[in-house]
Every structure is written in C-alpha cells, then in structure tokens.
Amino acid sequence: MLEAIHGRKGLQLTLGFLLGIGFGFLLQRGGATRFDVIIGQLLFEDFTVVKIMLSAVLAGMVGVHALRSLGLARLHPKPGSMGSIVPGGLIFGLGFGILGYCPGTAAGAVGQGSLDALFGGILGILIGAGIFAAAYPALRKPVLERGDFGARTIPEILRLNAWVVVAVVSVAIFALLYFLERSGV
Image 1: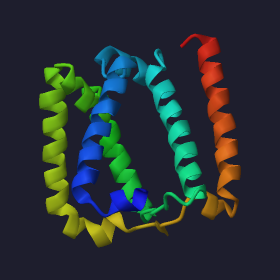
Image 2 (image 1 turned 135 degrees about the vertical axis):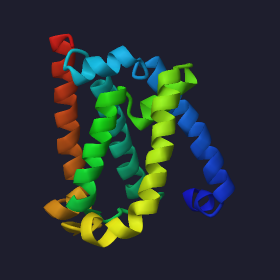
Image 3 (image 1 turned 120 degrees about the vertical axis):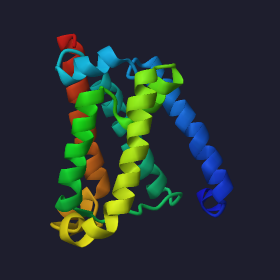
C-alpha cells in the first residue's frame, strides 16, 4: 500500500498538504499557535507545547516502528553531523526566542490570522531558506559535515532492538507527561 503512494509524487504532495492542514488544525486547537502559550513555554510557566510535542513523538515513534515491523514502511535515516546540528539549533532557537513561534506553530498561527507569524515567521523562513541555499556550497565541507556521525538510528547506535528503545522512551514520555499533569503546569 505505502509503496503505491511512494511512486506517485502528486498523491504524496496532496497527502502531505492535507496532513499539514490537519497538523496545523490540531496545533491551533491545542493552543500551541498562541504567542502567550509559546512564550509561557520558553519561560517554563506553561508546558502545553511540551505536552503536545511529547504526545506527537510518542504516537509517531510507535506508529513508524509498528509500520516498519509489519513491513509497510522502511526507515531512511539521513546522515547527521555536529556541524549541521549545532548551528541549525542555534538559529532555530534564536528565531524561536525572538519571534515566539517555531516553523510549525508559525504556519498554524498564520492560519488563524496572526500577522506577526506571517511577516516575521513565514517571511523569515523563506528568506532564511534562500540564504542557506545560496551559502550551502560554501558551508558544506568546512562546517556542515564536521563531526559526521552517519545515517544511523538511535537503536543502531545503542545496538539494541528498536522495540526496546521504543519501550524505554515510551515509559519515559509517559512518566514526564504524568509529572507535568500532576504538577499542574
């Protein structure tokens, strides 16, 4: 079934578009597209965003590995490096701290009519992506490929069965969600 989708780019784009709308709708309904909720998260006063993202990680992790175990999906990990993660994380964090939106919440906020997300977020994403695309050839070897750790998954790095990692991470996520709910944040 998924192989049939993989071979049809138009269907992939349509499904991606519809799932993106659904994701944005759920972010909006969960309150993660509101500036005050995101700033509350950055100030460690409102953990709505963490709860939403941990729930998404849990569902995605279990879903992907279930599909993989059933032979319906394959993992295609991309190579990673410290030279790409550290600058990317710093740029992401800077933009998140200044604007109060990450790319997903910025798109959701635009959908609910937030002009700051449109002009600061979406416009900033497009300009930043353009600058990165132009600078990529010069940055690739000297910066982005430094500290390369290959295209390995966490279970491969730990030399564990993927379901062992899924189980341990699931318990940790449930424990953290339980703690956050009990503490009232």
